[in-house]
Image (cartoon, rainbow over all chains, first blue to last red; front, side, top):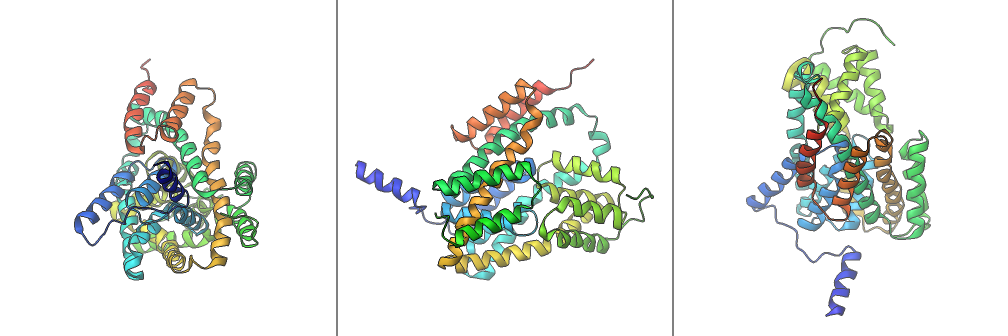
Length: 208
Length: 184
């Protein structure tokens, strides 16, 4: 009994998942996935980063498109790539369908990106057009002051989660800590941190 | 630093091209600065005040800040159509690059060298993720209710595994009631 749960824990640690990926050829699955992204859109606070934990829960635990380790990889790729890092959603969508071929991977990535951006874009259009009235509304004041600290707490939780799924030994944690401090204390472009860390990884100084 | 009046309204095509220029210029980072330089100084679609208002609205409402900023600029000139065109202009190139990187990753990630480089890169990106909270934390130290809210949200998510949507739907209205502006 304990041997079994030990094995399960080992498998979980190694990022091996027992669950099978949801098949998107079934339109009910497809609608469920699209709904998940649409409904998350309006909870994309703090510049979109509050969603990272949810992305992990959906893509790794619920739909099994990726292992936890692959999730860490594509998060790093989205951060290193040009453009808004929230485009990681496109890579999640791609992971869901890339086994069917590259074209399906790209289409699925595009669909995921559209789903996550559509509701927040519609709200943003309405807000932009009515801002002169919204600005002095008590709703605006209360919303801004209330959501700020909640977003802050969520961002700490998300940061910790990313740290947990990315780093597995002391040198890795040390590099992350140094990067965190440099991000806060200097104006060096994050691309440099990734380049140097990538080099350390390539030389075998940072391992999984 | 131009003090001139904003120029004529951009057409849909100009919006698309302008946003594409912002996206291209910022391939090495610094999207916000580039967007200000191009939209305010070069093309003079907005004056500085309108641009800063846009940043405020973009940060306040849900959605990635830079994407919201494109939506703000586009919708100012051509409503929903303008917003979608500006969005497409901003995302087309970076999204295409990302899709290519993604395909390369899913084809190549078993290659040992790629895997080892990524093992390094993810430690840096984890450090960047960790810095997000600290970056915003400074402003809230003096308000004990804000500290409590932040701590409560953190614990709810990290320790008690409360999901994002229920957390925001419960904590949000309670906090809004507390922070509702008192009438004088």
